[in-house]
Each structure stands twice: as structure tokens, then as C-alpha cells.
Image (tube, rainbow, N blue to C red; front, side):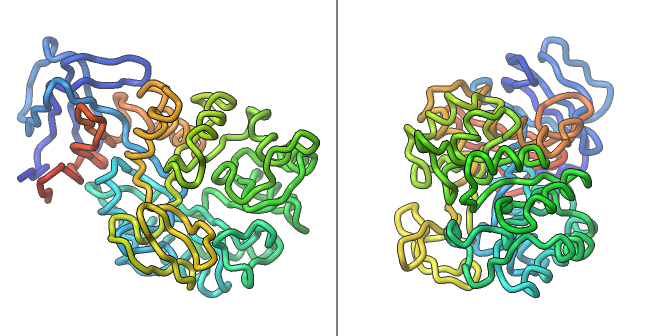
Length: 399
């Protein structure tokens, strides 16, 4: 059993430290931070550490950051309870996720407000090491386009409303980090400008915007694309659409669900070839059924059926995923032939930089939060530390 009362020493592992691998390395962790790292031949101990010996064939990589996740293990952000937030924060380290944005969805205004208030309260006062850290809120909807609703309940979709958003921003305790919206809708560009001015990310998603409208949105401040390909105007040789804009404009960081269901593996490869390792952010967009069995579940008051790795509404519309982010990392390596270092960039570095928190997360470096994932020879998650405390160990228990 791991107690974590003492400073921790990870020893013997391969370490990916930003731009290089350290073989047979060590990491010293104290007060939730990485305080020292190097090769074991240079290791010296002046104080007592809890030593975790790791097989030499295992790899230590920065904790993954999921900027778009609705739920896991029976819980959903829209449940608007502390218990739901706790369940998500405790479950996600098992897939290598050490921090995330609690993601809402289109619903009645009062339900969105309850979810925002609950998540904001939890973020600002209920978090502790040893669980995935909720970095903020991703507001997905209701400011989207009904023609690209997907699993967003169409009856609750409204035009972007700046005054309403300001109310929600206040209600959340100023924890909203990303807003997914359709900028072509009335009020869209006004909201985008507000987000940019106030340090939030405007993301284009669930949108039927033309290429020209996307260019206008970029000029207003859009710099993010919500789940590339899914529920947006696609690529056409006479109208490049949102997908064409995402491919062409470096300003746009593109989320990608790499489960082989939402996006065909060859289209994942196309996005990788166009955007490169710096332009993609791996996400799950997972719903509450992740980690649970096949069956019937709820998403925003809608019945969702999960069968064989696919979650869908009664009409067949995809309703989020049940993808684990660690599997997404393995998948993108398989689908594109990229190196693990590039997959790490897409799962940890890029989201940290996009959220402007790379000074404390996103890489294994002295002074940063000790958010660390240990991968075995098959790149499966063996152990996860969240801010210096073991949150998950394969086949074991933590305290």
C-alpha cells in the first residue's frame, strides 16, 4: 500500500523530459512538485523518500490533460453534484488523465446554471492531490447551430447571448476556460470577442460556418476547434468549410476523438499530416458510460445505448464516446505511425499550452506539478500520480 506521507522517489524508469529521454532515471517529488530529476548514477539522497522502483522498460510521461470530457464511471458534469465531480476526478487517473475540463452540454438554462455553480464551487474549494485536477469548465452549447446539433438537445439550443454568458461566468466562479459555439449565429462574434478579451478560449464547434465565416471568427478571436470533423461543415472543393479552415490555419488548435468510431483512422492520419503534432489536442468527449458495461444510459436527458465501444442516440447519432485518453494515445500512434513523443505532445503539451498553464503542467520538468504517468511496455497505464500523490496503480489500491 502506498502512503505518500513522505516525499516520493521514482527510480529506474525511462523519463520523457520535454525534449529528451533519460534512461534509468529518477524523479524526486516533494510538496506536490517535481524537485529534481536525472539518471540514477547521479542520484544522491539527503532526506528520507518513499522509493517506488519502476521496471527499466517502463516509461514516465507527463500526465494527460483532457479538455473535453462530459463524464465517466456513471457520473456526468450535468449531474451538478459534488459526488459526480469526485467520481470523475478519482476515475480518470486510471487512464492517465491527471487534469481535465468538466464539460457541460446544451440543456435548459437552470440545469446549465446548476452544473456551472456546482463545478465552480468544486474547482475553487474541494480539490486535493491524489485525484485528477479539474482545471476549469468547458461550456459546450447551448450557443450552437441547430443544423449541427448532434447529441445536443435541439430544443434547448439558443443564439449566443453575451449578457447570459456573463451571468454564467459569474455563477461559475470565473472557472469557464473554453466555450464551444457557432460563430455564424447572431451574437456569435460579439461573444467571441468577449472571450478573447477576458482570457477564455473561443472554440468553433457544432457549426455550419462557411470558410469565410471561420476567417471572420478567427479575426474576432477563435483559436480552437471542437472535435474536428464531427458536427461541422466538412471539406468540399468549392467550399473548404470548417474542416478546410482547420487544416489551413495554424491559429486553430483542433480537438480530435481518436477512438476509430468518431473519425475513421485514415481521416485521423489526414488531420495529423495537415496539422502536425503541434496542431492537434487529443480528447475523449466521453460520457458517463465510460468504464461501465454495455447498456442504456442518459446524456442530457436523452437515452443513449452503448454497444461494443459505441454510444448512440435512438436515431443512431453518436452521443459522445467511451474512449479512455490513454487508449487515444495508443490509437494515434497506431493510426498515424507517429512517435510516442508526438502523441505526448498532443495529449499533454498542447492542451497545457492552449490553457496557458504550461508553466505548471504538461511536461516533466523541475518546478512543475508532479502529474506523472508510468506506461508499461505496451504503453498501457501502470501508475498515475496527481500532484505528487499516487492516484492509480494497476492491480492495486492507493490511499
